[in-house]
Each structure stands twice: as structure tokens, then as C-alpha cells.
Length: 83
Image (cartoon, rainbow, N blue to C red; front, side):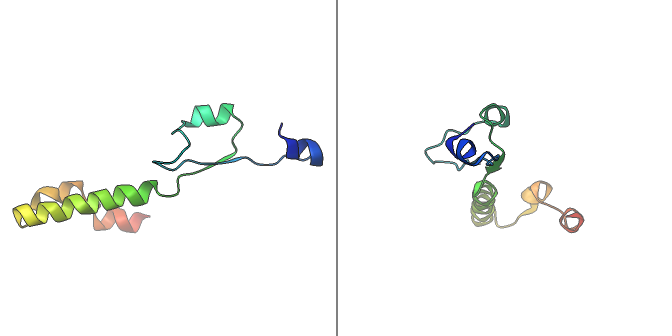
């Protein structure tokens, strides 16, 4: 247990902020569970992936002139509305 738990006698949730390119190694869920981490934040993971995907699409459009070859890798309208 940590010092705050010892002082209060109550469980204090542990939060890990796992951001890419930060100081914390990219630990897996098993490693975090062993360290008694209760919650994990991945604050920019999806955002960075979306930005990289957008960059790929725009480069392709500049080079090829259309998005036909990319359509199979895109989320469909139906998939979007399912969420």
C-alpha cells in the first residue's frame, strides 16, 4: 500500500498516464495490474493515430488525385452510426 492509504486507512486509486513520447515506459495492462494501477489514461493515442491517418490520406490525394485506393481502409457510414 502507499503512504496515503496508510495515513487514511482507505484505498486510494492509482492512475497511470501512459502517453507516447513521455517519460513513462509504455507498460502493458498486465504490468500495470501487477503494479496495482487501478486506472490508465491514454490521453493522445487515438488523436495521434487519427492525425497520422489524415496525413496519409492528404498525401495520397496530392499524389494520386483521388481516394479510391483508400476507401477499404476507411470507416463506413454504417460503422460510424453503430457507435
